[in-house]
Length: 233
Image (cartoon, rainbow, N blue to C red; front, side, top):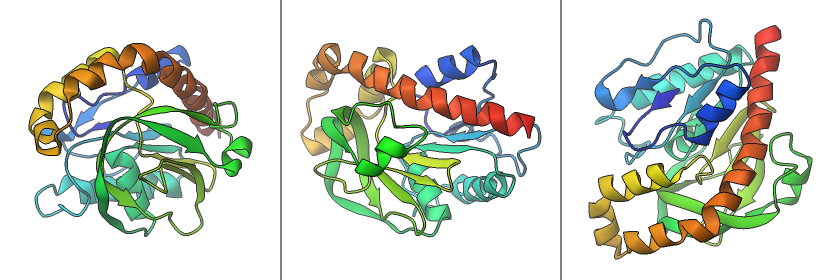
């Protein structure tokens, strides 16, 4: 699991993986830990979020290393899950372009699943519409050969699947109350720049977080199953 910012950890994904007998190993790129060159014994790869942009590779050289590891994982047919920044890195590795969105999408905004999500292995049991938690300024095009799975009013491509084992999800379903609180504290300057009230984001957790996590569990339990299947092949 590649963690690119202190507040953004696996959240409920970590709990789910452990429930399935899979023990996550963190590589903390923000602390200078090196991205592995090979998957070795790992059965899957998760790339988490962070405040940097994919096109800031001169400042964050680990982004190139992550793309190489994604490519290695896909060559070995091992499941890849990119969340937020991770989805942008995955999209870039698949040849899509990353650009600034018309405005930053931070806080609680509705997610709509596409018709294709109804037949997708990870998302078929999820609600077709629910309130998502977001924190991004960049957006990506749908990679060639990928299937669009979700959108929002501000962002046409919120999630995609590629070759049934690689998934990019721009919004956050893994978050807990602590993760959201830590993000609000860590990225307070960004909230002030965008004139967004972190207190309102926190207050809305009582209404939206439980439903969001329920949808996330349905999705990520299926991803854990993909990892178990990869381990037996």
